[in-house]
Length: 410
Image 1 (cartoon, one colour):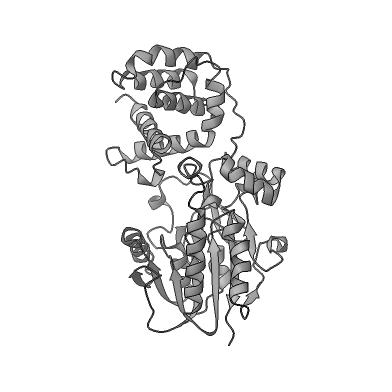
Image 2: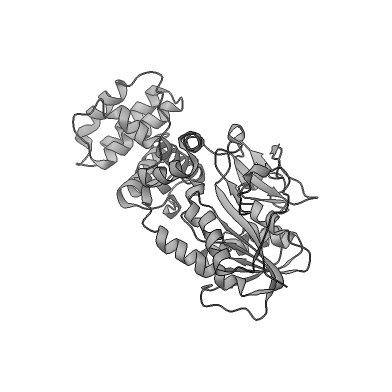
């Protein structure tokens, strides 16, 4: 294909899968593309998803009737590119060419695509995209409209890349965040960065690195990382000198954990099993349970989530979280501690889970150790830690998380 067409056409196909079929971006392989084109296609699709509904509002002023989905997505992609400052000439020509090559269902609409895109204002300025109603409404109820609008503003930005660093190892230059993570704005090829080959760091959002900091692992402790994949927390625990068992139900995801352990030279015992049926041979000093959840706190990195989820899975997820928490508490030594976390913005998966757990287990103690770089106001009245994407907004935000440290009586 001509320059730029391959990545753009693939981005349209990805959008077709997300919007039309409810497929996640992670399901896209892109093996037919060169690595640079694959990365660009994903980046274009993500950018379009961050602005999709805003692009529709602009496009609908120039469309008399709804075009086929692939044409609509071609137009959305072009609008998103224009809003990011891409030159109009190249964007329009590429969109027209993609439409021509789309076969009988789209080729005859190439003229329409050309006319609509040439009618757009210059520059193209899009309003911040709002969250879908199923998510926005409960978040407004929980946090208020101003905070939700601030969250949406962070979601509209391409997020920076965060690294967790190992002391004494080389690492790239970047912005050192208050909690110790390193933030990169334009990292490029990761494997070319200083410290990659030496295993001196791994990719992990700054918020995702905090559950291990809250657990405060110590050398030689027996620690279980429950629902461990993709493995960033396993690496943190192993780097702290703990004797780590990492468990996850997904064999492909556990293969990623093993690959990261191999690169870093760290050690952990990997177990692929269902935590609801698995039983350890001996209790653990500490457990980290990063439970399956709606992942609504990670939309800044996964802009496909609002388009493939509708909240209907929430009751089953919260029930699973409670079952995993109860089961894990039974695997602790007397006096042992457990950190429960979810990358969710919804209180049903955080604050409400803590309240319910304390009701079921009134002998549990909630602990709130000081964590470097965090505003004490982030602690909830019951002792949980609530993080939102709008925190550190000027530095690029962070993923939304809830986490709490619980201690079993001695």
